[in-house]
Image (cartoon, rainbow, N blue to C red; front, side, top):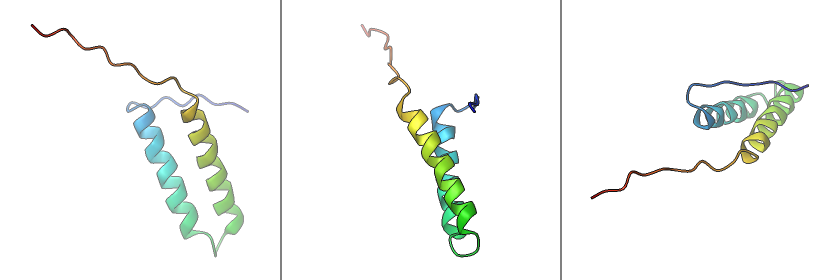
Length: 64
């Protein structure tokens, strides 16, 4: 199943979500290992999708 995720901050917001999932997973390692593993998998999937995005190009105005 695919999903479209639209974030105002773009990839920066997505990377914060990945970090939050990984932190949350580490807190659940002992109490809910299956949930922690699921959160890590989601974080990995989002990270892989971010890696596939084209590198943004910066356009600079010529200075005189």
